[in-house]
Image (cartoon, rainbow, N blue to C red; front, top):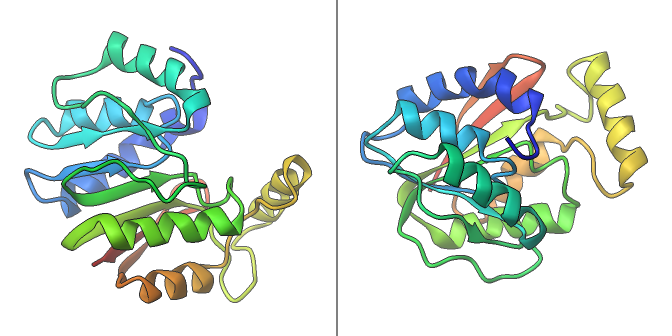
Amino acid sequence: MQRFSEAAENNKNHILLVLQERLPPNARVLEIGSGSGQHALHIAAEMKSIIWQPTERSEGMPDLEKNLSDYGSPNILGPLQLDLSSEQWPDTDTNCVYSANVMHIINEKLGESLVRGVGKNLSEEGLFILYGPYKYSGDFTTQSNAEFDTWLKGRDPNSGIRDFEWVTDLANQHGLSLQADLSMPANNQMLIFQK
């Protein structure tokens, strides 16, 4: 598999259990930042009635396309290019937008673009599911998350673990209300919003 992610491998079953509980049976999921496609491959194989639309930036498309071609299931659509620095989103009919481990990798401006795009493109009463680490009242939930944040900023000073309050306020501004904040393994959270 191209660009194999150990983190994605470790968390895919925990994420699957939440999605099985929360998604409608015929959900149409738009994934932002599919990376290697490991979540798409695992979740779509286990939830055969959903339709999964992966997306990635142009530089990540060849690896994603190869992985989906080699290991994909019929309910995974061909990946589409999506760059959060552009306001152009794929024209898809979606009642769930899913994004894992993206918000802390991108800068705040792109984070705002992500949430704004969800607000514009998600169907009414659709779900926005964000997976990853967050700070609460400016504090890290664990020392390991603080160290991870330092590591992230060493790679890109504009990245870093975001404040839960910043994300939820941003979501509210774009018509998305928090439905659940679920603790997940490895000091991550699953934030579930509804339009």
